[in-house]
Figure 1 (cartoon, rainbow over the protein chains, first blue to last red):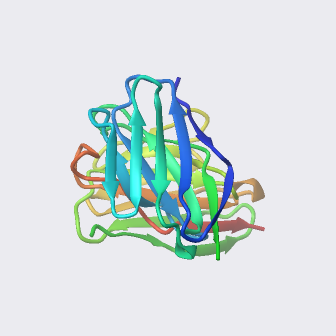
Figure 2: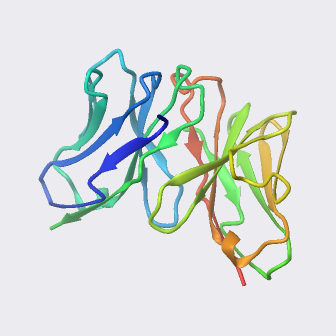
Figure 3: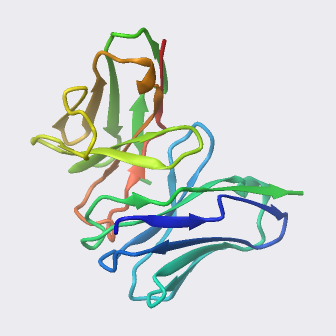
Length: 113
Length: 118
């Protein structure tokens, strides 16, 4: 019930392409869905987050698409750059984002020139 | 932006000894801090939730007597790994937020502590 399933496990995208990472959840009480970016040896950094009352949120090259009926949300990175190479985690929590985060399993993204 | 500082970044200790990891919120008061553990190429697993002035809430399967958490002030939480063993070797990460809701005060993470127990 508390799981967040993330795919793919790893992804290779050419520079300038679109990177797409998907997550699915079961718990309909989740009401906060953030994405985190983590570089090796560092802690995760918040990238972008969405609430279930909107279907899409865009910040620069990063967009979250949210499908409430399918219980799925995804991260799109437009014009992917080598500096975007990192591990990305989706997450979810309840209680208006007050409760603990449940993390997805992570996606290792590699952007090749 | 909000900064969470974690110290030390790396520590090597001998089996049977204890290690303390500090987590500080540098420019905000953290009412809640979370401690995570991350094994190589794996996700973050929540160990415990720490609220200032009260006892930490541990996740199922986490030994509270082994992983001592103290949240003595609004800017400092510590995790002490007692009687460390090689299987405790991992990447420990703390996180903190200033408010009660991530809607208004997102969770910020420290840079983690790599613990190696020999």
